[in-house]
Image 1 (cartoon, rainbow, N blue to C red):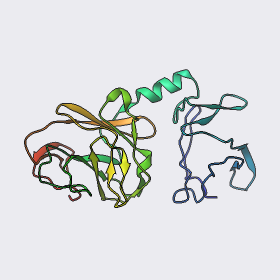
Image 2 (image 1 turned 90 degrees about the vertical axis):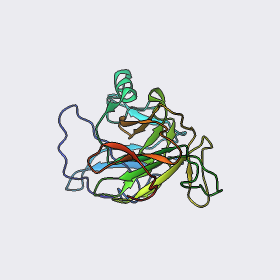
Image 3 (image 1 turned 45 degrees about the vertical axis):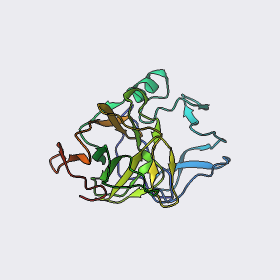
Image 4 (image 1 turned 120 degrees about the horizontal axis):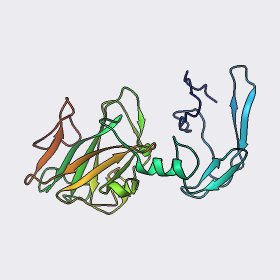
Length: 231
C-alpha cells in the first residue's frame, strides 16, 4: 500500500484516486473477491469493502450505507442521478495535463502509419511535470459522446508526444500505432476528456494538403507544416 498525498477534503467534496501498480503500488484483480481498506496514519482501519466481480464499465457505488453495482459511474461527483448528469455534462477547461498539440487532416505525404497508409492524425502531448497514464483520457469527434474512445494503457512522460491515427479502425498495432474508432471531417469538433469529465476542444479544419493545426507555447492554435511526434 501507499500513503495518500497530503490532501484536505472539504465536507461534501470528492477526490478520485487511480489504483495501479505504477501509481498506488498495487492493483486490483479482475475476478473480484479482494478487500480494499482505508487506514489512518497509525494503521487503524477506517473503512473497508470487499470488491465484487464487475463487468467492463461496471462500478460499485456507495449510497449511504452499502454498495451497489451500477453502470452509471460518476467519478468526482455524487453517486446519484444528479452526480451522473454533472459527470456526463462535464466542464470545458482551458488546459488539461495532456493536450491536443497537433491535428492533421488531408495527410497526403506527411506521415504514414505502420501499414504505409496516410490517414488523419492527432498528436497529444503531456504538458505536466509528472508521468500521466493515458487511459485516463478519452478522445471523440462528438461533444455528446465524449467518452466514445478511451485511449489505451500507456504512460506518457513529461514533454512526450504520441500520435494517433483517426481512421475509424479501432485497434493498437503490434508496433504501437493507435487507431481510433472514429475518423475526422472538416469542421468537426475534436474533444479530449479526462476521467472527471473535464474536456478541451479543437475544431478540426482542413487547410490544405499536409497542413497541420499546431498548438504553440502560448496555448494558441495556428497552422503550419506537420511535426507529428516532435515539438
